[in-house]
Amino acid sequence: MEGFSLVVVAAGRGERAGGDSPKQYRRLGGRMVWEWSALLAESLFAEGIVRQVVFVVPPGDEPLFGEKLSAFSFPFSVTAGGAERNDSVLNGLRCATGDFVLVHDGARPFAGKMLCRRIMEAVTEDRGIVPLLPVSDALKKEETAGCFQPFPREGLFLTQTPQGFPKDKLIRALCSHGEGAKDEGEAWIRAGHDLGVVAGDRSNTKITWPEDFVLGENRFQKTFRTGIGYDIHPLVPGRRFILGGVAFPGFPLGFRGHSDGDPMVHALCDAILGGSGLGDIGTLYPASDMKYKGISSLVLLEDVARRASSAGWCLEWADCVVIAQEPRLSSRLQDMVRAMEQALPPEWRNRIHLKAKSGEGEGAVGSCCSVVCHAAATLSACGLRREELDERR
Image 1 (cartoon, one colour):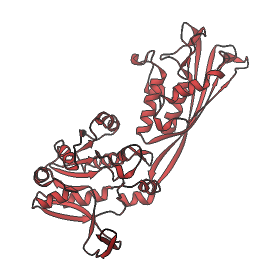
Image 2: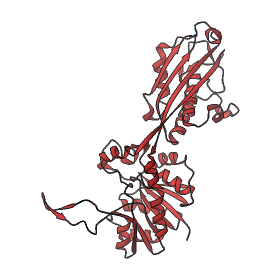
Image 3: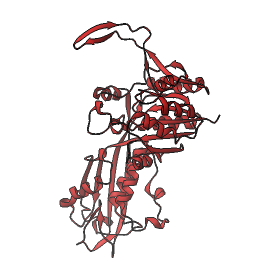
Image 4: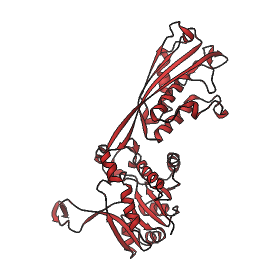
């Protein structure tokens, strides 16, 4: 038998969780909920535990997931979900290359490697495995409308994901007995197969209700880092003056440079790269590469932000200063801020502060031979608290 595929089902609407978008797209710990399953997949693949990952997503959102997943190292497929959960899982299973599968709910961002190992070690060619937790709360059952009676909790268990099965046998079970099933284990039992169990994980909670996001955030801690950026470009005739992504067509001088030469955007790029530990623009976008010749620096800023965001970083604040003798910049500062923010992810916007200073007639800046820009960017990254990490290993 040839290895495991991880199938992450993230195609639902998540209406009970509230919000303006499906819950898998909402932010938790600085990432979209479904991205935590991608981080689990990265860890499982790095240790050779899974061979491939399949994400089942809302129809039409395949490009979004594909772009995000390209930042990870594991082999992946993205497929559209169906009308019901059963259809979505079947779509994912048909893309899986492993002989065994772990089927995981993308709304469970806290699943850990230890739980996955327990499941995978127990699965056989004839036996599926689900993780269970004993019910610990007192139960009441509504016998008639508004009339509740005690109900015994003995012998009752909560079911979690991931759940492990031999792939082909699960496909047949879902095709014949999956309609209306709440999870894969239910269809598996209906089909007459043997279902085993392993201990679940109390920390492996599901995001279902609005308050689950508040409780989930409490399980993370933020790391803060600050990066600094600096750039200087000479002013020469025959080039456009583009600063902070804004053109000044009436000014007779422009920036000498391989790209459009925008020193403000370059300084901000380097500040973000420095804070996220991802290098610098000279290394990532070298002047020796002709594909960057004349390119808008806002395109570079967009790519820098994408790299930092994919690495788990979020911009908290950027303070920038441009030092120039001419032209006068005060009336265009907000235009520059807006232009730069449009190149950033939506959740990073309204976090740039820009100031302009005069060269005071001193040196190369004061004689209108160059423009100097500085930027400082504070970024944050969310990680599980140490005690959470210990439980997941």
